[in-house]
Image 1 (tube, helix red, strand yellow):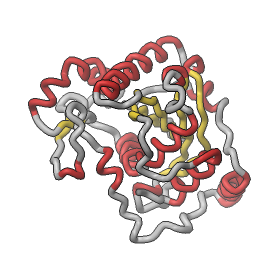
Image 2 (cartoon, helix red, strand yellow):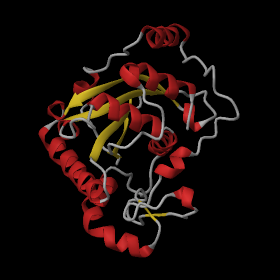
Image 3 (cartoon, one colour):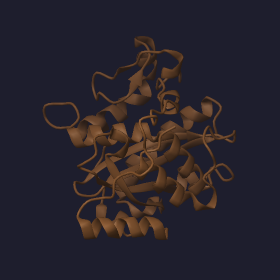
Length: 254
């Protein structure tokens, strides 16, 4: 869900978090451009994110050979059939209106938003695993109702691959209280819908994740389900921030 955020409050939470990532960021400031990925190769295709691309009603995945289509209104939510779209409309109606509110007058997504959404999709398994660890929501699901996981990004203009289109500066666990009251109500409403949907399908709940690009100001807000089962990717452990920034900045996808 694209939206507008109060950048000032959120950037107060920006800390790079590890010496090697801070060193790379300082090189960027000196050289005027981010360092190129060191480990990304042509084999970095990644298909786990396809499993996480699911119909927003029945949760069938693209890995099952399903062909999706997007909501005709917001062009964001995806479904595997007209029947699933019809059944989901009751809960999607409000979100559809929110999505359209932040789109240009001619409809559709501007390129910066489209790129950020594609970057998010490519790295979804990594982002989900880091958010789950940082929030500690498996042990205490209520934390997902009190905190948001935020990743701070800047564009990487020289990149020719969507998985390295942004440089991750840092990540933080941010309380909902950091947002303006009207945004809190909107964000919590969408989180509740996602939580109810995930719980109904056997998960523990949903997390709210924000990818915030600084200069230009582009924001992508996504809901990610979580369960107490094993993660499909490695556990980032206590050094989750370094693990996350390394994988995002090297373009390493599952």
